[in-house]
Image: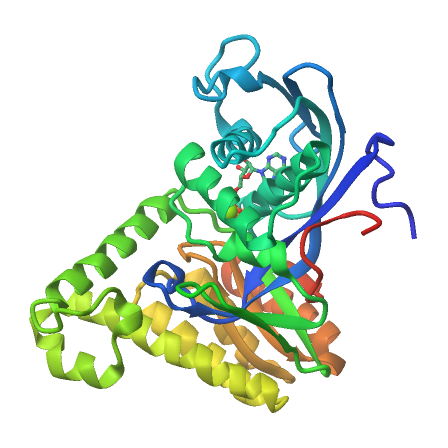
Length: 384
Ligand code: ADP
Ligand code: MG
């Protein structure tokens, strides 16, 4: 196998940082619920070396773009030429800013990166990028932080500096990935546990190629609807802190205080959290079929109750479920485009991928990009 760092300079700091796919538990992380992602074997790779001054130079080979900023300018959000930081620059600069705000030493750095993660497809290239830089600055600074604290600082960078209102799941999964395991993560208590993936199954991701402008506004709207559900339900349940605290029986009893749309959103969140818990039992019992049924139910709920699907995503899921060896399929990520995730019997995976690609082409005239992926280790320095 060729050296995956071949295209990068031979510098002392080398980081490998995976993307992630969420198997179950969609739109629940900002409701303090439980999620079930895996880190995948597609990565941002970063080579870096410390500098003596306070300049940061970064090159993204993927975007064929270079960036320079001074650490002293981070609050002003300008590059070394005084121009406003924008686009991808906000991610590494945001990480430097968040680390510094956390009292950590951030040094000048030269960095070059290359990635085989699709950008903006919902596989969290943004979190992979953030964690890669967090680990590079950690290595250069000589300090050491818990992985969860690193993930939280990266989330802060994405929320407050890049201006994207994501929950903690992406950075968590990127930082904590375990080979051959799914990651059960309670976004309220921050407790997590790796659970073995069924050894005879493969995780297949299908990128619909759809990228909706609507995605950010749709996501923010759903967040607001969930908050609205909580504040309305509080008139009946004063102790309710988030939809995480609600169960299905309570929703039946008190749901009449919610407008119908908002009630549907709440029902999705409540039932989706229950599905995550059932899915953990499936994993413990090596029950891939049971896990797959929960995925299919999760998709139906995202389509009908949370209303974040698209015909293309529904089509990919419907086609997948009709193919032999497919245990389950659902849209993954925020919705309005991006990818579906499929759990498939390993022996059937290659035929599954070919058939799904053909069906999508026939039905929608579009090319799906299909990847078979392995649950992988989280972001780390090479050689550690
Ligand atoms: P996702 O995380 O689902 O891939 P996002 O919109 O959250 O999508 O993040 C994508 C953004 O992250 C890109 O627009 C870019 O700013 C940044 N990014 C991701 N990968 C790279 C890369 N290899 N080089 C430069 N920037 C990247
Ligand atoms: Mg992202």
